[in-house]
Length: 234
Image 1 (cartoon, one colour):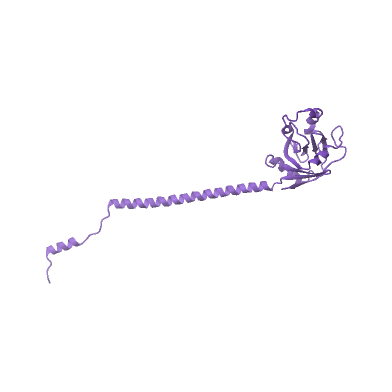
Image 2 (tube, rainbow, N blue to C red):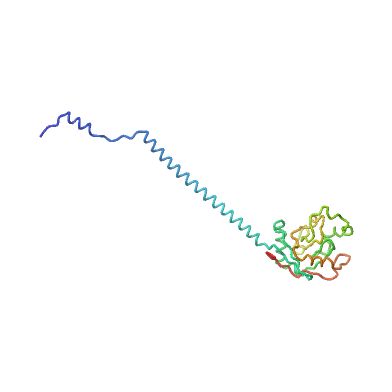
């Protein structure tokens, strides 16, 4: 058997390659890449999570607004006062006087105005339907009635004729009265809460205004509200 010379063994050992060493720079670059990937994934998750919460909140807000709008839409927009002289249709100001309109609608549904008399008729002022014995909100107007026609109608007029309102102050089921103006009234805001306006049946209001009354402005012949019907549209 031939013997291998020492020089040949040395050359063979040089040809054998040992394990490759990883440099520090390579390790740092790999760690940096891993950190960047983790950061990217976290940022993406956080972005979509916040977007989902925002979309849910926006959707909830839209649903809430839609519910409020639907509730407003359910409120009748018109009231038809069927009287012994004919029908009077009034548009209800549910945006500007929501509480009074709600109270009025509730009383209509309870039949509060059924059979109610027009107990005061003041020509060129107002017709009043209710149960009160005194003049109430119309008292000051009657005191000025004699010289009312001498007023300059172009000055300080806040409301026109055919406005629907009720008296200010504490009201209850028996104290909610209806007033329909038959002429512009300078201090209407001080006397009434206006919650509607006659849009049809003005001639019926004028016919009631023309009835004969006694010295206390009570009609000599009974005029009453037969019933009140509520409508969404006319």
